[in-house]
Image (cartoon, rainbow, N blue to C red; front, side, top):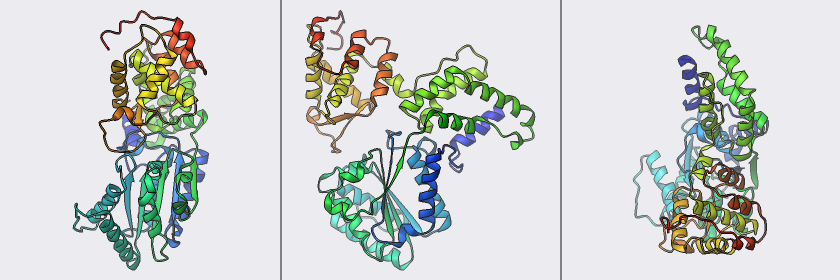
Length: 432
């Protein structure tokens, strides 16, 4: 068992290992972009820009290789292939729309990464124009030395939502030069990320876009089998145990509880990280012949199940606002939706609701959508949900304190003024 677990750890956490989670569609996209990059087309024509669009799998800015979504896995693997094919001829600069809130800080980060890589002196006090001139000079030097620059913009849609889109305009404008050997690659969870571009920016965009769809349940099962099944000839010491271990894995994959868990993962979050977190403990219980074979909830569902009733009410209010075709909303509009839906003497105060609202922000279940720095007027800033409706529904079902009336309110599409006739005997004095 220890030797088998050692092989699994190497597969899951070794950064040199190739990603094993590749659906048929992903393999096609992989080959499309890989051949595009290795053939040097990526740098042979001006205005190279490409957008990778896929389901949001990772909500945090700091990620590791095995925690990436499929679009980021493919990008990282192909960039590594290009670096191996053209050693010392490619520089990669990475930005994130969540970290670099304005155009000045983003261009400053580009200059900083280039200075660190090429051992140049970096000026913290440089202005936007000075950093832009520095980038222009770097691209000219790259052209003379036959080097290429790749700018990877994670959360590309957040860059596109900034006023005037000055950063994107200047970057794509630099790529228009025939001697420019550079490319801009955006990663976004929005399928319409390219439509967010202004006309002057879109005219410089090369209209290359690769879409990654979430895999179905069958491909998740194949992923688990590829990760967990041990090759018989991997080690002489494992030869006598590998067949028995693989038989247990096959039996576990055929269990109804495992199939149910895989179906939930396909509907909610099919990233490798979430799959591993969700199934690994269940698998260990099975291998140890324990009685616990009930599938564990994904981390997001567990976080929702730990929320208070008021926090669940606020999330449900946001869901109802989105059903009314409102992509973003402020705390005031969320609280008004809650008051309109639940009119009772037992309703929570606005002060208690605001504390619950701040807690949802801390738990990263909701987030600000304007991309600005921290502001004292947080109740006036627009926010959006960072979880899906399916995850919220699963969280309501998993919550031990969620009242049945809240589940009914969640499922009701229209105005629920009838809730004014229902009262609850909740003890709200502690939270108020």
